[in-house]
Image (cartoon, rainbow, N blue to C red; front, side):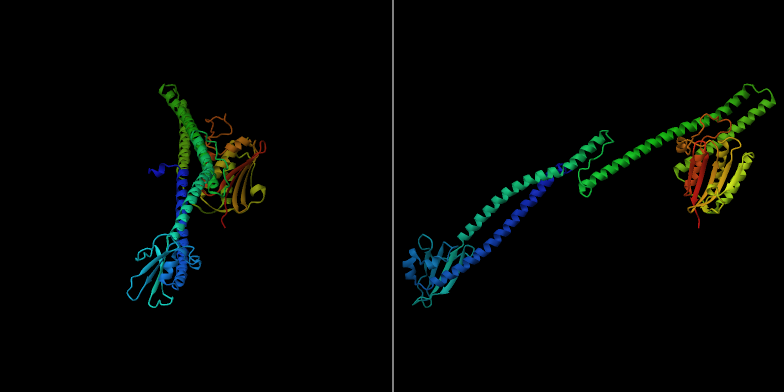
Length: 465
């Protein structure tokens, strides 16, 4: 990390802003001074030219006699020049003569004039007898430089005061502007300390950068909370799944183990006893095999949902077979084949995996037979509703409570918790598998019910045109 990276953001912003402001003021001052000196020098040139025209009308003797009191008409035009030197150059070989006017002091020696310090104008003499004489008038730029220096000093002084004031004001503005960021920082620190329910307050309008940051942080925290809740719920389901699976596996294993232990102890003296025990071992083995198959299927779905083989089909064929399954399971039950809701049977073309869909409907039919009293009527409905192919399995049994409806598709959930697992009762995986198979094909499996009013399980798949 660089040294600059360890400096607080507010200090860096203040330093950079002040530096840019100072550079701007210096640049502006330089431009002002440059634009000020140029017209002043031009004005000096004009005034020196006017003075040269006037002085050229006087002879050196007249200028020498009048020098302490140069005519006002000459000096009044020199408001930017307080030091003027007049040099007469004679063509007949006489030595040049120099006079200083407008300033006290002895006449200067004749010398060259530095163009950075003097402005010079040379004109021919216009006094009587001045033929061949050149009058050179030089005006010092000392007064112009003094004016520019005073303006420069004033600019720097005012600029320094203004920079100090603006820096102080900038500090206050930055402190106020960064206050929302400090609130976000404090909130983040509180969340990191364990206050996960805390959120960044609405410190600014959502259209501003800070407001957008606060909204983004709150959205991120909400997503993290939901993810944490989902993870905790998933872990709880996993623990429950493992516990239930272990319990379900232990039940048939215990039956098999107990039966073999009886045989080993010689507690089965008769052939009939052995046959009964072997029948029980076979039933429990098959049950164990079915349970393991279901668990493996769910595990494959959890890892990566398999891609179903979708082919054109009509759900009426599945519904008719379901009706036959119902009659085979319990010939005493009244069964009917209708359309959805009890109307006329209609076509239900869909794209689906027929083998998987038959597995689902078989599960729904078996569920209706096993969880309703003998003789309870069951209706199978098939048709198209709002563009979806639908199969219904409706019974007139005791129905389900609201809590049961919410959990009926959960793994290992059984509506009758006291039901024996040895009498053919399932492990509570059938409906969970059925819903997984339907959802994998882009469909939905739902239940509508009311206590005492029966239950209707509805499988719906997108219709095929």
